[in-house]
Length: 123
Image (cartoon, rainbow, N blue to C red; front, side, top):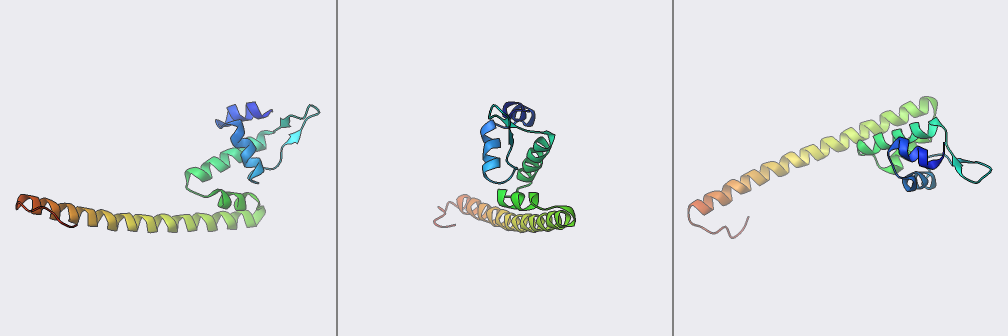
């Protein structure tokens, strides 16, 4: 299939597909006699993998690293990156929970000062 059809089937722009190739996320496309890029169904699967990775918050570097692996190394690489992403999310959740608690406390303090007729000079 040509790049336009791949773009349509994957739901991303042809320019994004060319970028993925340049960035090493996808293998270089075969070229037909006319010079047009020719893709197979594996390219569509690769784009789907890239999109899933991005939706899960993985960087393009992490996705690139995993797509270069095969066999048992692929499994190990996936597990390593998944575990690291889970750790990152747990850390973000902890940080957000602490920020939320601090914001609620500050809100209550500002509201109490307002009700006493005080102007909150500092948070």
